[in-house]
Length: 211
Image 1 (cartoon, one colour):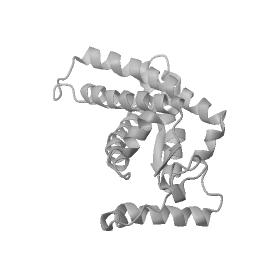
Image 2 (cartoon, one colour; image 1 turned 180 degrees about the horizontal axis):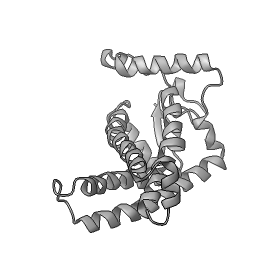
Image 3 (cartoon, one colour; image 1 turned 90 degrees about the vertical axis):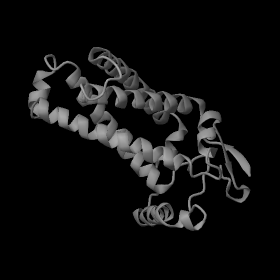
């Protein structure tokens, strides 16, 4: 095994703030949505926590965005320039997750400094971070002060439309967290990827270690 530094400190800080923040948002969101069925905290406390943690996550998002926009690490999100090659790589990765891993086959993706994400991850994370997360933040801000943003809410179709979009993405993220945790356990040991997000260093086979 050879160790390569794939997770810079700003990325690790962003990741863990985001992880704990989204878990807190999901918990408080369930409390707000299902008041009477869930009794973890008061409704007022849930709303206050949901609002303030939401603004922290919005600020955290811009830390992530500016870090990748203004450093060479943006390359980790760039997909294969050839659509055909990218599709084939994504298909191989999907086959590995759905079938090959249970037969003990090797992961077709080899981590390098600028290719820490496989083809499926690079595209799915871009959709999540550049589309779903901004929509969730925007709808959340609109619902935070319905009176102030009434014009925008009416333009989008009303409170019910904005709330529905917010809840649907909330449901998606609730499921995504479980998938994300599962995939994080698929390293050469169950905790390898989790440890790398704490230390920044990833263990890879020497013949596949890249720069």
